[in-house]
Image (tube, rainbow, N blue to C red):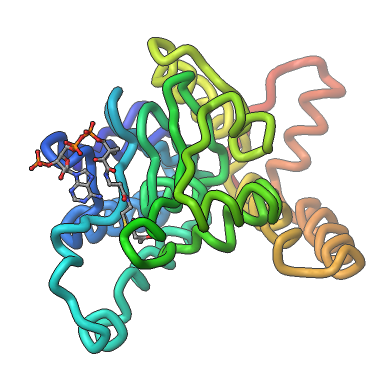
Amino acid sequence: METSVTGRVAVIRLHRPKALNALNSTLMHEVVTAAESFDADPEIGCIVLLGSERAFAAGADIKEMQSKTYADVHGGDLFTEWDRFAAVRTPTLAAVAGYALGGGCEVAMMCDVLLAADTAQFGQPEITLGTIPGIGGSQRLTRAVGKAKAMEMCLTGRRMGAEEAERAGLVSRIVPAADLETEAMTTAQTIASQSLPVAMLAKEAVNRAFESTLAEGVRFERRVFHATFATEDRAEGMSAFVEKRTPNFRHR
Ligand code: CAA
């Protein structure tokens, strides 16, 4: 794994080329720890997750899991660490080129914005290994693309290309592979230029849609909307509009 920071954007790059970025326990721990430490840094307004041209990540590490027993995975609560990645409050963006399979697809789906290169391939092939998704794939894929496609993908292991993924609502946009990282950074910089506390609230409000009834979600949104009026940045944003200037958000 490699990390870097440009302005208010932090980048975490999966880098295990020999295994197509398969997520072994070391890589998982590094990614989760890096994401949490960027999340704790108020100077970071967006966290970008990148892979390589060939693979975002080809899944959890099968070779590492091969000899584990039920007692091992249940006792150690295998993959629970990823819940900490999903709990990051700073906006996250995954830029996927090539394979995003199994755990790779699941980690991409945990991110708030998902951009796909035209080479992207998404899939939950665990069934072909005699297992099922274990980092939320059966839940997040179903919420993203609906039962019909999620069920077929989880039962057959069929992969979804970028165009189908965009049509189905899994990704927000397709970008030519050569432009993916530039586009990811531009989008991340746009996100990071907003008020961080307000972006966190926006993220929380959208995520609430997956966890509540419409009435509860709308009530939550209304209260959070009201709460933005307690921030300096809301006052600055509206004043800047009225005064026809760019807002100078101070992230409070
Ligand atoms: N775990 C461990 N090693 C992996 C891996 C994985 N998930 N995916 C690829 N690799 C390794 C291969 O074993 C190979 O290593 P060697 O050179 O040492 O043999 C290397 O990466 C390159 O892979 P291939 O030679 O297979 O490359 P390919 O271009 O022929 O095929 C591929 C690419 C279709 C992605 C194929 O590698 C593949 O099917 N990978 C496994 C995909 C998969 O099943 N993912 C789900 C994992 S289970 C999971 O993620 C559980 C969960 O939900 C948490």
